[in-house]
Every structure is written in structure tokens, then in C-alpha cells.
Length: 199
Figure 1 (tube, helix red, strand yellow):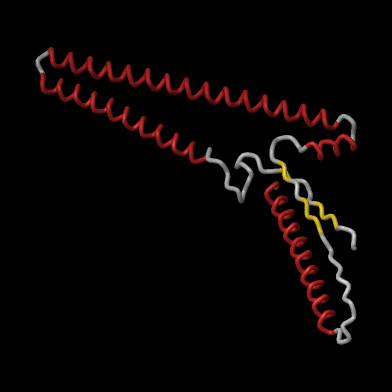
Figure 2: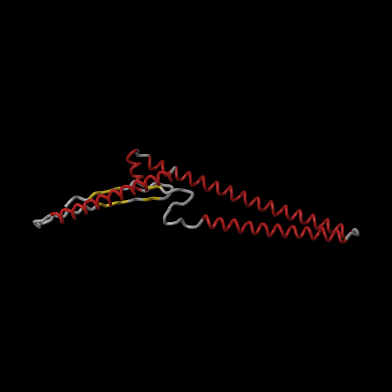
């Protein structure tokens, strides 16, 4: 929703700057026509029109101070309500992150404990079989247990490295062409075009 609103504002800014460029081109062509068509060499009065284009852009969970002041004009308690809303949203995100991180830690501890129990059981069976007269079978069970344990360790490590690389790719700074982060789009205020007085 915010991306489409931002695109509409960008298109409006482009239209305004194109209109200003067309207006300047028209005035330049008009001045050139007046200069060339005057055969009696009467003095030419030049007029220049200067336009200022001012664009404000703000990014973040809170509106920029100018917009916040506008909300204050609409209702005296609006800025305070907006601040409370932002604070409660931030507290919610922190709680959610704590739950997610705690769940991942518990999952890792459970996986490590299960792997330890399974590998000890496999080695115990291998030792029991070897002691009771089947050394080849014990060696196969023990070797398979160690190979499986090493394979899980290597697979888990490479999987964690891939996740970290993917997280680094997501955490890279945004391009200059698109200043918003993927999680929260930029909030922009409308642009202002202020025409200068004619000389």
C-alpha cells in the first residue's frame, strides 16, 4: 500500500518537474522569437521565472515532526497517541523476537541432546556386540554411528553458514535509488512547488 502511494507521489513529482521544464522551454523559445522578430532593434525586456522544488522524505516508524505537528493541529492528543502506538509496537516486536530466539535456542539444545543420546546408544550397541563375539558387526555399527554423527555435524554447520550468508544479504544497506528498508517502507510528505515572484 505504501509502495503504491510512494510510486504515485514520485510520478506526481516527475509530472511537475516535466511541466516546469516544458514551461521553461516555452519561455526560452518565446524570448528567442521576440529577439529575432524585432527588426527595429527595440530594447528587449527579459523576464525570468524561477521555480523552487522542495521535496521532503522521511523514513521510520514515526511521522516526521512537520506531519506530527499537523496531527497536533487536528487533535491535541493525536501526537501522544501516535507515540504510544509506536512504543507499543516496538515492545511487541521485542517480545516476539525474544520468543523466537528462545524457541531456536531450545530447539538447538533438544537437537544436540537427541544426537548425543542416539550416538551413545549406537556406540553402546557396537561395544556390546563386539564383546559378545561379533567384532566385525560391532565395527560396522560403531563406524556407521560415527559417520552419521560427523555427517550431521557437517550438514548442520554448512546449513548455518548458508543461513548467515542469507541474513547478511538481507541486512545489506539499501540502494540509493530505493532508500526504504524491506520491512518498513518510507513515508514521504507531499512535495511543495513554490513559484518565485516575477521580476
